Every structure is written in structure tokens, then in C-alpha cells.
Length: 196
Image (cartoon, rainbow, N blue to C red; front, side, top):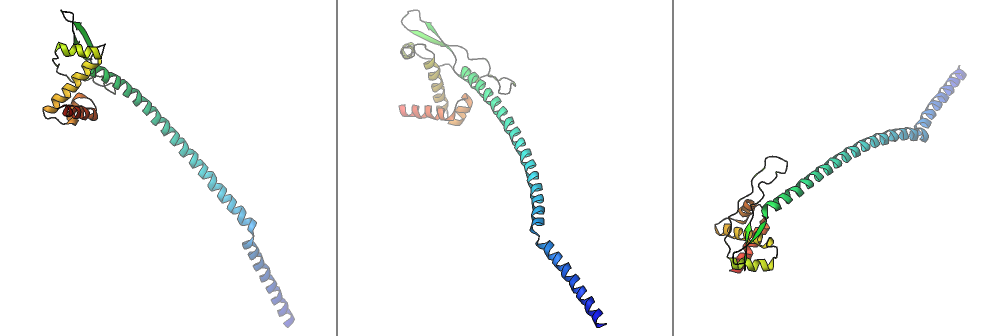
């Protein structure tokens, strides 16, 4: 009886030893853990690649859209600047006087309308009061500018800015009214103040 009891205890201990060693081997088996980790990391990498590709496609689409919009706006700005320059600098026609010694520039009417940026309703350009200039200064100006176009428009613009400033308007209001840069208006005002 004692021998049977001893044999069962030894068999039980051997069974426990086998069971525990198997669990320990399974727990410390590196290759199984590495394979499981590789499978998990592979799944994460595939998911991240898909997400990255999708995000890159979205960004490329948005960049292409922004580039198209910038090109359209650039084109519209070029057209608007061209039309604005055409409206702001009216052509000057030189009419010889009856005596023949001096020529009097006669400003032509400005372009009838400025094209709106989006192709909407057109607005008339701001009216400028013509300035009376003596014929002697016209001939001096024609000597400096043989075409007679550049000086008259600039003189008219600067004179108009000076008159509006003397009437009490600030540079920003003058710039808005005439459709020119504030810096240009401030420069004309400063130069006129320096002449005094």
C-alpha cells in the first residue's frame, strides 16, 4: 500500500513537473512571441500605409485646387491691373495752338468702365477734375516728355491728390477715392509739403 501511494505521488509529481515545464516553455518561447508581434506590427504598418496614402492623395488634390485658384486669381489680377492702369492714365492728345509755337495737351476721356474682378457689374471710374495749365508750362512739359502722355497724367494725379489733401481728407480716403496705393498718396503729400 505504501508502495502504491508512493508510485501515485511520484506519477503525480512527474505530471505536475511536465505540466509546469510545458507552460514555462510556452511562456518563454521567443519565436512564438516574435511571430505574434511580427503579425501585429505588419497589420499596423499596412493600416498606416493605407492611411498615409489616403492623406497624401487628399493633400495633393487640395494643393492642385489651390494652385488652380491661384492661377485664376493671378490672371484676374493681371486683367484688373491692366484695366485699372488704362482707366487711371487717360490718353493725352497734343493739339497745336494757332500760333504754332506751343502745343496744348488735351486729355482724352478715360475708359468708360472698369471691369469687375469676377465679371460682375461694371462700375464707372472716379471722375477727376481737369486742371487748367498755362501753355508755357505745357511746352516745358512737352520738352521733357516728347510724347506728352506721361507728364500730364502724373501732374493731374498729383495735383488732384494735393487738392484733396488740402480739403481735409486723409491719405487713406484719398487713396480709396482715387484707386491708388496709400503709400503713393503719402509720398505725393510729403513731396508737396517739402516744396513749401
